[in-house]
Length: 241
Ligand code: NDP
Image 1 (spheres, rainbow, N blue to C red):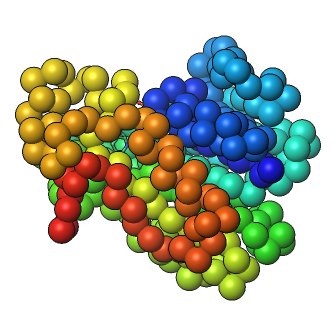
Image 2: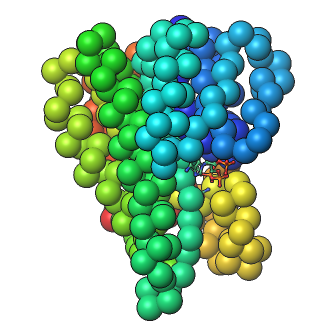
Image 3: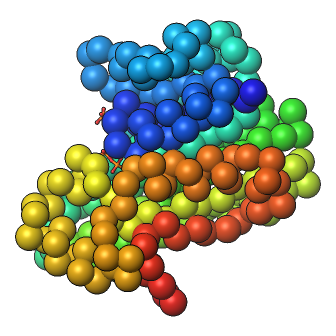
């Protein structure tokens, strides 16, 4: 049983990860930003689930979230840096604000939580970090200069950290989902989703559970010799790139 923190686990891929780790018997904390904390997912014990208020763009909230988890259960042994946003727009129409907001949430936000988690993992000589990147990082979807940059940045950051902390048996990996059915993609509209699904070799949109299973595997004992890897979970969409 491990103490797991999943950022942005109140919905979408993060919520599927919360359920995966709860089903695995772990103690699972997740962040939320809105007024009400998410309830314990149905069918799981309330004392295995903890919702901590935290916006990953705010270093003080990150510190306070970790302090709450540590005082409740002890140090975080598995971090899933999942929280992310899009603010799409074609390059010439993209404001600098739209660029930096996405970098701050997706890349710097992941840096903030990983740095805080590592402080304890290094002392424990164990730990697992999984960053949620995207197929957009390597195929370069139009309208996503900010998002693609943030998600490509995660790959370089993960590999740098993986080399720094490998000797302490801490693994750092990246999962790169393709098109997954969540609120983030429903904003694209049915026509665009159908067009993109047509390019997926497996011929379907992914589910949040498709991603959670791979995140869970990377945190498991079976993945103890995997670090610095980028695992595409995209139905083959980015194959060969
Ligand atoms: P959703 O939009 O469904 O959920 C995003 C989650 O991130 C929410 O819980 C949201 O919290 C949280 N979040 C956003 N910004 C912050 C912040 N500043 N601080 C804390 N929490 C924050 O997204 P998905 O579940 O679809 O995506 C999850 C991850 O997977 C993201 O990193 C995304 O980029 C990546 N991904 C998704 C793909 C897809 O097709 N869906 C494809 C490739 C990658 P709140 O509810 O408060 O807004």
